[in-house]
Every structure is written in structure tokens, then in C-alpha cells.
Length: 459
Ligand SMILES: Nc1nc2c(c(=O)[nH]1)N(C=O)[C@@H](CNc1ccc(C(=O)N[C@@H](CCC(=O)O)C(=O)O)cc1)CN2
Ligand SMILES: Nc1nc2c(ncn2[C@@H]2O[C@H](COP(=O)(O)OP(=O)(O)OP(=O)(O)O)[C@@H](O)[C@H]2O)c(=O)[nH]1
Ligand SMILES: [K+]
Image (cartoon, rainbow, N blue to C red; front, side, top):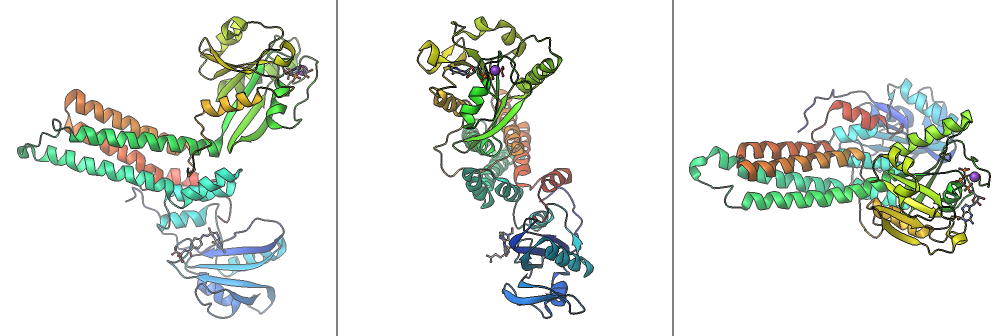
């Protein structure tokens, strides 16, 4: 199944499974072959499988460290698939340290971050997207993200990927049979079956890609830079979006000199808003550095809100308003023009398209039209807050799906352009391999190291 060999690690690992610090209950968890022997030493008898024993926890010379619940899960029926033992004690840092040190004295070693989950993956208790979903569940910052992570943990995403892989294998077998037995005279190109199946797989992949995109947005959100001339109202907009007074609003030009960040949620989608220094030629060294940073942020952002004061600028055409900005920006793909202060000009709020750029008229001060902007931001990111039952996804999943999609396109080309069955089969295989990277059936040690290394300790 996997293309790598992992050392069957015989170490017994131990870590505090609960968060560090004070808590009602704290759990030390062990996994590995010595779990049972260590358990017996601490509780004084062989614990019954999956039974909550309320007992004193003692050292070898009968000194009592704590009293609590001892829980033994013999492998393979455990979280990691190995023998697991849990000491559920009182959640104080000193008690937890004493219990953990004692487990180490009895032959366990401290677990690396993510090592319990890594073992669960290695022992086929879960695939890679499910292991990643555990970390995402723990790290989720909104209820929606938590729900989606739980669905991924329960296999919703893996199932979609596995179905695609199944369909690809089915098609490959057909194509390869036709190549291997030309005397059968299956005109596999002419009969349309291959083309139809390929198109079906492609449609399904696009569907999964859309859902994964949504899942990644819920996990990572979008970054939005607010840029504009001094006093346009950038800080006011940041405050209106975040509902807080995080940025200093004054009528003095150049109030914001550095980059300010605020994280909010729009119906579950995280938004990282960045307020930048007003863009102008400044003699002030500090302000100039701020302006340089503003351009750095602009180049990295998912969306750029170019903000102008509608009082001083009549035109709604971005290229007329600010040619230097447009020139420096290059393309307008990620640009939205925000015309602020319509409460003063008495213009109506709303959104329109002008010269291929979305133009939103609003008042950051009164809040009129701010809702049009948030709806627009959700729309440009393809975020649909009405969809139910989504799953969480990561950038690497999207990349793998895109890669598979490119191989499907290449395969289609081979089929239609050249009638090249061998090359089509090769593309199908590559597409399948790209998909297998998602669930981890085909992954490098390096990737696994990076994924599990980013988990918290004890997970
Ligand atoms: N005390 C405790 N609570 C916890 C965990 C834990 O490790 N310990 N978990 C850690 O993340 C999560 C639960 N995850 C778990 C996953 C599988 C098994 C388990 O025993 N699986 C067996 C048996 C399954 C069954 O009885 O149906 C198996 O897979 O064979 C236990 C916990 C959250 N709560
Ligand atoms: N009437 C009205 N005044 C606004 C609006 N938005 C901002 N202002 C005012 O415009 C002035 C500048 O607002 P800021 O939010 O500080 O502008 P800024 O673009 O962040 O300014 P710098 O930090 O100097 O770049 C303040 O006096 C705000 O109260 C608006 O929609 N309507
Ligand atoms: K200002």
C-alpha cells in the first residue's frame, strides 16, 4: 500500500493528553508494548480491559502519587492500535509531572508531537485526512470549522477521495485490457464508454474540489488588505468589520503607520483583515517603511480593498481614480474598489461592476453598505454559508486534487487528440497517485513528518 518503510517503533511513548496547566482532571497517556507492565506497577494489579478502575497511583516503593481512574485498552482495540494505558488523575502541573516522570522511570519515553496520531495512522486506525482532521478539530476557531473537522474525522472527505480512486482504477483496468488484448478488437476509443467515464470522473473531481475549497476556506480563511490614501477611512472600515475599536481613527493623515491585523468570522469563514498605512509619498522615514510594508501585504493578499473618499473623488473607474496604484498593482483580479463616506455625499450604497472591477459604495462610519461588502467578500472566495455537511480541508489537499485534475485533462487530450491508450492509462495512474497522497496511501516520510510534527504534544 505505502511506498515507504517505517521502522516499527517498539518504544512505549508517554505524554500528558490534556492541556498543560491546572484542570479538574489531567490525563497521562501511554502507548506501546510496555503499557501493561507499567500499568501493573502503578496500580498494583492487571487492569481489566476498558474498565474504569478507581485506584491509588503508586510508585514502586509504595509512595502514593495520586488517586484516579486507570484505563487500559489492549491493542489493537485502542486509539493507536497498540496497548494504551491512561492515568486519569488530578489536573495539576506538579501531579502530572510526577506521574509522567514515573512512567518514564518505568521504561516509557516522552512522545514527540503528534506521535500518538502518527501511530494510529501507521496502524491503519485512520487515514491521513482523518489524522489531520483531529489537529484541525483541536485548532478550530469557529463552530462551523469544528463541525467540518468532525465530519472529516468521521471519514466524509476520505470517502469522496476513495470513490474517485475506485472509479479511476475501474477505468484504468478497462483501458489497459484494451491495450493488452488488441485482438479482442474492443474499439475502446470509438465506443465512447471511456470518454463518458472519464468525463464522469472529471465532474465528480470538480465537485470534490469545490467542497474541499470551501473546507479550506473554513479552516484558513481569506486575507483582505485595506489600502488607500491617508484619511480614506481604512481604520474605520477595519473597526466596522471587526466590531471593535482596534485601529485608531483620527482626522490626522498618516495615523496608521504600521500594519494592523484583525481576525473575524463571516458566517464561519475566518477573515484576516489587514489595515495598512495610507499610501502616499512621505518624507517621514517611519511612514515610508509602513508604506513599503503595505505593498508587501498587498502582494500577498487574497483580496485588496482599494479605498477612496467618495467626497473628493467623483469617478467610479479605478484606473481613472488612481493610475499609479493600478499600474503598480498590475492586474485587477483581486481588486475591489471601496468608495467610502457615502453618508456625506448622500449617494446610495451597493455594489456595481465598473471596468471589470467590483465597486462597493458604503459608509464605514454609519455602517451602511458594509453588509454588501461582506457578502461580496464571501462571493469572490466562493464561500457559501448555506451549504450543509461540508468537511475540513487543507491547502495540500487542494493541490493534490488540482494535480489529479491536470492529469485527467492530459488523459482526455491523449484520448481525443491522439487516440493514445497507453498514454491515457499513464495519466490515469498519475491522477490516482495524486489522489492517494490525500488519504496517505501514497506519501513520503517527509510529508508525514511535516504533518504530524505540527500537532500538539500528547496528540
Ligand atoms: N480518555 C480518552 N478520551 C478520548 C481519547 C483518548 O485517547 N482517551 N481520544 C483520543 O483521541 C478521543 C477519542 N478517540 C478514541 C478513538 C478510538 C478509541 C478506541 O478504543 N478504539 C478501539 C475500539 C473502538 C470501539 O470500541 O468501537 C478501536 O478502534 O479498535 C478510543 C478513543 C477523545 N477522547
Ligand atoms: N462621514 C464619514 N466620515 C468617515 C467615514 N469613514 C471615516 N471617516 C472619518 O475620516 C477620518 C479618517 O478616518 P480613518 O479611519 O482614520 O482613515 P485612515 O484611512 O485609516 O487614515 P490613515 O490612518 O491616516 O491612513 C476620521 O475622522 C473618520 O471619522 C465615513 O464613512 N463617513
Ligand atoms: K487618519
